[in-house]
Length: 137
Image (tube, helix red, strand yellow):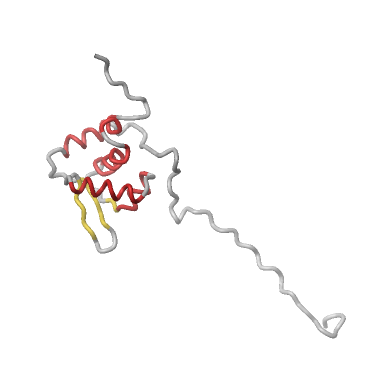
């Protein structure tokens, strides 16, 4: 029987799970004490916001992650009380030396603070109109 050989660019998470789930698991289970809000996860993983929301809803339904809201943001973190928490965390840590997945079709989102400043033009010198005189005094 032939052994399954993975390409060098992938890791065990991407072999077992779809790329969206693998990236969210990597972010959430690499530091289970840290909380992420949805837009932050979308920005860090370069995935679409709706895709991240759908996957987090699936993971919440399976109780792999816990969530809380502060009225403005919904924060997610890995559920340490789940029976497969230690197994998933070991998978994440084994693949920790690999590069994180970044979509080739979509470049990472820019933070609004790091955008280029718009070019500001110098104001032109004041324009003087004199009527009835050839030379101003």
